[in-house]
Each structure stands twice: as structure tokens, then as C-alpha cells.
Length: 189
Image (cartoon, rainbow, N blue to C red; front, side):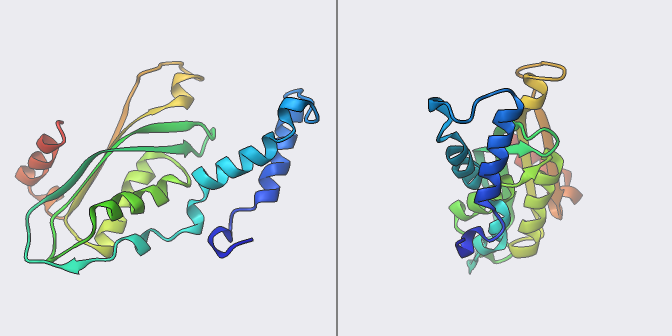
């Protein structure tokens, strides 16, 4: 097992996939399913391997003489609901006011995606991203997520198209209504 995947157990995921297929009445030895456990393990390593990565590694910063708001908006994301292991996906918007340091714009996305690659609830995901920004970059930040949850759209209440919105604000985004409104207007909310 590589250092990058020290927590993800590929063989256990393959075996669990076989058991699931058997549990729903499938023959795991039929032609179409022979490679499915391996494919599923690769998929889950890609989309749920977030415990093997440290989000703080992405928020390396450098000094600048800038205190103006930075916003990266309309970032597509997906994660898996920890209650049903169903997909939820949507758009994410991240803003911060530099405290005399900035990070690469793609680094914000990479950091956030580490948290997305863990079984989640949207509320915690939003908070984790904001808290990582405070810890590593700026005490003044805002994170806004809007997502559709397949656990609501394809099962349970079966309401496709329903969007859940979560927002975490820190520092001046929380304490100053004008700053929060500037952010919301910039992301079209």
C-alpha cells in the first residue's frame, strides 16, 4: 500500500463490493461482474480517499500587498452522504480577505476537494472548509455550498431538483453585514 493511501484499504473495498453484489442476488462470477469489485475499489479510492490527504498542504501562502476580497465561485463539487453513501453534488463558492498573504486560486479548490473526498454531511463540509481557511490563510472568509442530494432525490422523499444551501462565515463576513452582502451579491445570491 502506498504512503498516499495509508488509510484506504483497497482489498476490503473489493471484498465488500463482492458481498454487496451477492447480497442483492447477483452472481459475482458472471462475465459482466468479474471486474466490478476492482473497478468499484478504484472508483472509491478516487472519490473517497480524502483521509489520506491533508487539506492544509494545499494552502501554502505568499505575501502580497492586497486586502481586497478574493472569490472563487461556481466550483463544481461532489461528495458522498455519510448516512446512505449516496452522492450529493453542486456548486461551491469560496471567499476570503487576505491578511497580507494569498494562496493560489487552484489551491483553494484542491483544499476543499480533500474534504469532499470523505463521507460527509453538507453542513460539516461547509464548516471544515471555512475552518481550514481560518487556520491556514485568513480569519476573514466565507464558504457557500448549494447541492442536490441523491438520498433525497432518488429515495426517501423523492424530490429531484431540491437544493440544500449551507453557508459558513468567519471574521468580518460574520461581523459586517455589508461584507457578507458583497460576497453574496458577487456569487449571485
